[in-house]
Image (cartoon, rainbow, N blue to C red; front, side, top):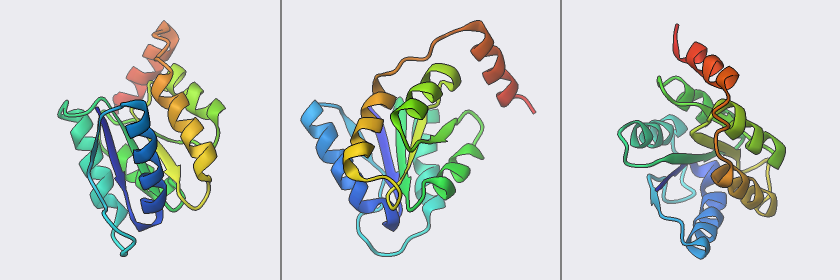
Length: 143
């Protein structure tokens, strides 16, 4: 199950991603927002992050205008590794090397065609399980 969340700047792209996930038969839960009305992105970043940590969802996709604010918020929560990706290479690398559990996108940065390719790459790339990457992730998780 994929957790989806956005603010008003990511609402339209989230709608495109939902259509894509529906076409692929990928289950998701939408944690909001539900319109173009102005909202605060931290609310939705936290909902998606906690859905992952609570085991309700395996991975998440967060979208705001740039992807930056919403990813910063998610990354404040221990156990979350959110990565802003603007291309397929970074989406693949963050899954292989960082075992990122949230993809962050900028609805005002990446067009829908590219965004769907990034989503596909992120969702279909497994973590490498290389010892050096596990070691580095463990270093991230400790203060």
